[in-house]
Image (cartoon, rainbow, N blue to C red):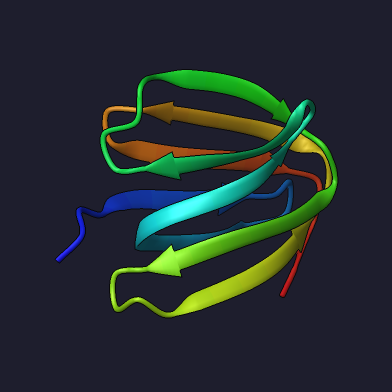
Length: 86
């Protein structure tokens, strides 16, 4: 079984997402970037675009997010974004 980590998405209005995931692929300013468990600490800006999330049960979901920030540390990832759509 693949290693997992906690992933959250926060918007100004609410906590939009909170789950254990295997990976995410997010739309960074310089291109898409992937995050797996135990990723090195990172803070980066995100552009509006498609976010792919792979869950612990190997299912995948796609979301559309607005501009924002991604923070990765201590086996957790958080996206602060203007908006999110499934």
